[in-house]
Length: 232
Image 1: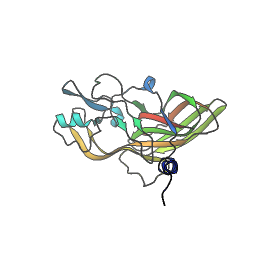
Image 2: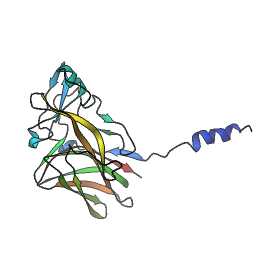
Image 3: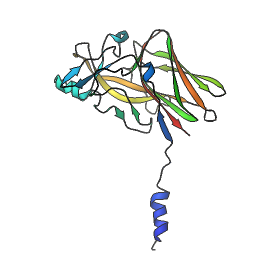
Image 4: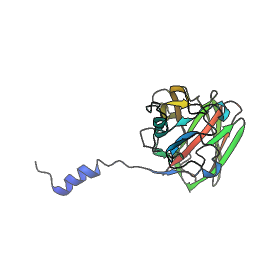
């Protein structure tokens, strides 16, 4: 049976389309205070400062270009492009490192009992995503979501970044998985098994979100890399 042209187009492009919610990456530039990734700028590696463990003094990540320059394997280095594609667990998210940048901060280091606050693009969100690592064990986190008409508090226990996550975990997933790490002189200290996790927090879709405060307990050392939200 011959299908009319307009009906065929509707079948191919109408039924086949998937609705994508708008994703907003939040601006956390004002709270960035660390450079945990060694980059490759001007023909030379630029060594990380304030790293991913040891309270910021132990180890850092390298981009593939930086690892290649020092002739280390690149399979477990961070990609040179800091944009991590959308998958079935998280939206596209961009980290703040770049091989073209040797000066600016790349992440927010959180030591001991501390908290940080940042504004978001005002709107109604269904889900929030936070790219983070915890070293020296798990870190207890509280997310204070301030809405136009009040505040809610969500809690999460961020696992150590060496720990593998269960398949189909509803609370966490990987942004980057199975990474190596390098010491202060860009000497590889462990060749794989480290992660950047994504913490998934449900927002109240009926309320307009204004700001987010993240509070960390005393245990663990956290690096906060990026955050995004899914707008309705």
